[in-house]
Image: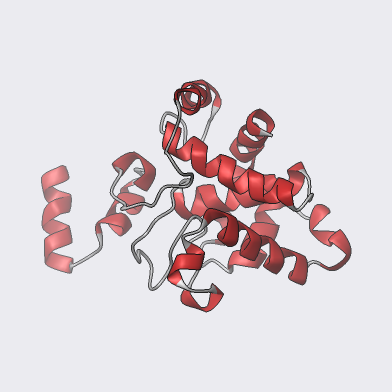
Length: 190
C-alpha cells in the first residue's frame, strides 16, 4: 500500500502531508516537520514523564504521540494565557487550536502557503520571528479572539467554533473533536 501512495505522490506531485492526512495517519505521528524549540533548553525529564502520562489518557490525534517537546510547547501556550490572566478556558481554546494546526509543534518551515509556528499563522499576522515565538504567537491568537468576541463572549461559544472564528480554516470541523484532549492537557499543566 505504501508503494502505491509513493507512486501517487510522485505522479501527482501531491505534498506528503496531504497524502498522510488523506489516508488517516496523523502528521504528528509522521514526525516530518522541522521545528523550533518552544522553551530554552528543551524538554526536561519531568516533561518526558508528563508526556508518558498524557499518552495513557489522550484519546484523539495526539494519543500515543505526546513527547517532552510537545509538553514544552503546551506549557509555553498555557504560560502565555496565564500571563494575561485569561483563565483555563482561554488556554483550552488555544491548545485546541494548536493541536489541530500543528499537533503542538512550533513548525519553522512554511507548510501551508506562508504559515509558521504553533498556530500556523500566516504572514499578515507578523514577522516569521514573531510567529515562531510561542509567547508572541499565543498573544496574537488571544488578541484576535478578544477582538472578535467582545465582552468575553468567547466564554459562551463552543471551543471549536471560537478556534475556527480566529483561524478561519478551510476545515472548520476539525477543532471541536480536539477539545477533550485540550482540556486534559490544560488540566494537567495549569
